[in-house]
Image 1 (tube, rainbow, N blue to C red):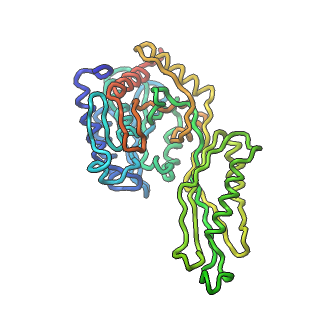
Image 2: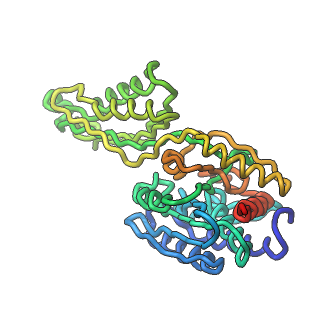
Length: 374
């Protein structure tokens, strides 16, 4: 099989199936621990020293492999958007020619194997130092692991994220910032027919507040486009009671930090429309906008040059989705993402990867890590 060395296709497939069959939805601490234990075994076999970091969201893993120069940081996550039982129902494990289907196979358990396989190949050879961090809560915005990511980023020469690439295989350099916000309203309950004036409808207040949110995010004075998705709305108990509580969860995407500050500042300053109502906003998770820097472009150019030497054409461009590389890129660390294999269907029942692409990514990472300047 092109891109995978002799003896590796079966090993990679067996490992991938092993990871996919450890169904690991976000915040499932037991599944997260199983994932970390399995990954630790493979990293240790590759010559790494491994440590675990636990939070109330699960277990993250940090692997260190000695090498030349400041380490290159490899970034991934072990959680998925899929609940337990998905394998037995909507997204079963299957292989059809070059295509492998399964929950989490694309986002991003195959990317985790790219890291390990490349480092295993280099054991006993001259190569760059490696630090890998696999967090347990990326799919919910990494609310408990951002401090770990910051610590792991200290002293590194650059960072590579192993999320999925663009559909054509291009890497990702620059990502929109992403903030998940909860807008909560407290009203006052009353009988909807006998004493409606005594109540304060939290749902009516929420509707009016959401119109204000829309006005804020579409303000033509903002320096760049802001994407806004009201993803969840809930409130009230029954139709004959003025609702005392309601809330919405809102997803916001930012191109740049200026728009991000203005919008979040305006939403934090929302005030009630109705006398007696209480409006609260709280950030559930936040990733800063990452605009591609000169350092990022230089890292991309270096990877593209190395790719050319092994017959791979490498391109890179910005992406709308956010990930852990947002934080790293925003810190000024030379960063690139999308180093996972080609495929499709992230967060969808069509989730799949290309086996050939999986092998190609292992080849490319091996070449990047083996490129040690004299």
